Length: 169
Image (cartoon, rainbow, N blue to C red; front, side, top):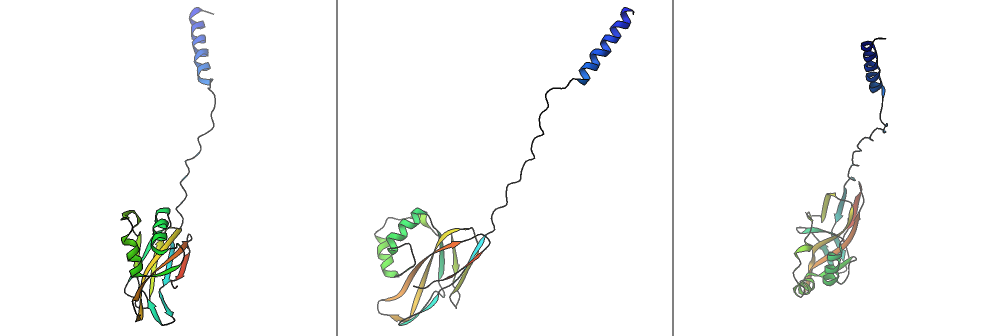
């Protein structure tokens, strides 16, 4: 074989070897997963009209505040209402206790709903969590010294569910 032919064959073999040589094989990258959708919101439907031994109470014309169940809120409610459970206190007493506490702008309501003439209210789209509802009610006929009350009610909202709440002492 001539030298030229040998160089051509050698070049061809070298190129052929380069074309068939493979590096290490790696598994294909997994597809990027989409994040799961957020849980469906829940809802709260409530009723804030009830009978007392000497009259009727209703939240008609007032609003209901929705507050998250967090430590700083719990501490404030304990100081204002004496409890973090279901409780009904005269507005005057709660205001007097509030005047003795430091200001608390970090415990503002996250939502409010109006009570209609029948004492019904709703929060149609609420993130699933634990909350407190705070409602002002007026008692008729007025009781001596106490015709306005505040009710505190804990409530738990589940994803995609409507929580029905009747606010009463």
